Image 1 (cartoon, rainbow, N blue to C red):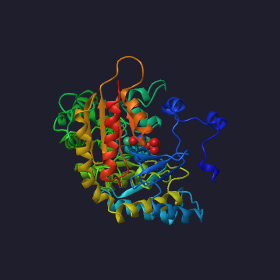
Image 2: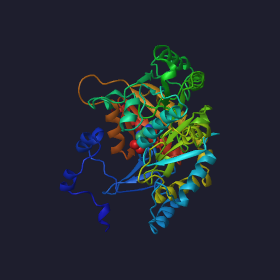
Image 3: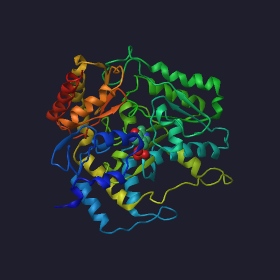
Image 4: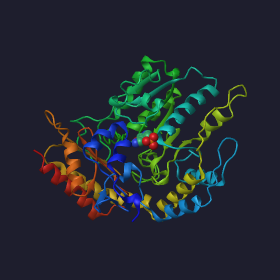
Length: 443
Ligand code: PMP
């Protein structure tokens, strides 16, 4: 019997701790997965758990995707690590070319990192370096958005908008403003896809420009669809208005596509579905189908040419990581794109998404539900807060689902869902039926 698939010993359970945000909940109710395939996780005691979260918004083509597993095995047989400081490996060029080929028009330069957090910090540095190379070193301010999640680095935390993540860390980056989030409990509740209400909230960027001199603002960073903050699709016209205001004031627009990148909402990148092209895109997660840590920053040609070939007196951007463009990650990334493209995953997602949307919104009349949101294969089911102690209703439903063999996730009072894009209509039905039963069982 393979020892790696055994449940951990009590001693090992003491030694190892999980991320701060999950450790207590884990200790109370450990969830241990020792294998995975397709839509399912396996527990050491032999249960099959339907994965409603694609791992953590990343295993878009399903677990143990055969081409990716084979490519990693092959590359692991070589172990030919090459640094990216003044040298590189051919696979890095190949992956960059493949990503540029499916990226939004113009975003044809790719820099490799190892996580979404690194992608965000890299993008923020590039934005400042771009303005500096144009002789515009006053442009240092950054604008994020309430409920935004941009990873756990100090840069990403500074622009993020989930306040409980930001407490106690002492001064974050200064010179940061935040746009309001776009969710309104009356005006856009139960909207399907993009809410009709809320485009005007983009004009808050003009309000920020009226207070801060706009010629001091380097970049605006938003998730095109807010993910960890509770799945908030952008209102119709919102991103267009943000783009226009950025253009008017020479501000770079960054889309954090760590969740929406690589097929989640029905095209390789969310920007393509939403019809607005940013100057910089950050991505990770689905880039290797979650198989190997890797992230990327896509920049358009003009931004790239400026910060790379700015005036001779401008310092070269000092940035990079030991594992940028690691051959093993690049092999996984190429095989992930092969899988998405050859299995038609980018094309199939919009079809599956219409079944998904109907199934999600069928919960409208279930107990405690105050809002349902969806786009692509993302959904949120927001529940009324529970009075008094006992944890959120969402956490109770999550546990009910787990006991019934279905994995979902919570963001405060909201259940969030992001299954592998290979989910079938029967599995969609099982997922939402199990959630409904969980809602009905709440006291
Ligand atoms: N940006 C977004 C939009 C994310 O959802 C995440 C991760 N959930 C990150 C950045 C950070 O990615 P990582 O955990 O790989 O650092």
